[in-house]
Length: 152
Ligand code: CUA
Image 1 (cartoon, rainbow, N blue to C red):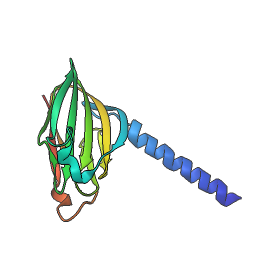
Image 2 (image 1 turned 90 degrees about the vertical axis):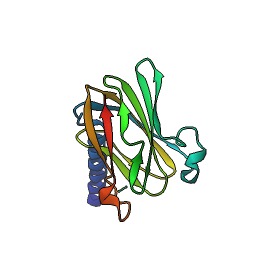
Image 3 (image 1 turned 90 degrees about the horizontal axis):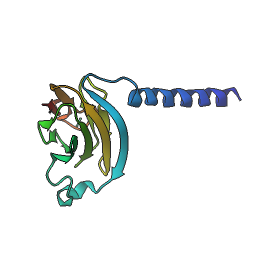
């Protein structure tokens, strides 16, 4: 019986830690407000409206959508340019293997899994430049996989 209690406590602790990572710290400039996932065929990104041309699109008065593709070993578009003081929803997917998409110094951070679209909505603050790093090992070039986010 003790083992079950211990196991339950461990699961609760893990869930708590995951929750803290997802909803906890708010980084300077970019604050995450939602994070969901959809599915997609990683081999056919070029045939999709969203990912055939990775880009940032204006979709409302102060709302933007960023379609980002991660592949060995970089992110497109690069740089990712979004306006300051706006709402930006990132849709991030992979063309090959599992990557990470972490905007350094913020809580904008997600795994990028082939076949899935990670959706993250953030509120941008004033102008700033951020580095983007891949934080999941993805092959020989993992350590050089990076990008840039410019809030202008
Ligand atoms: Cu991509 Cu590590």
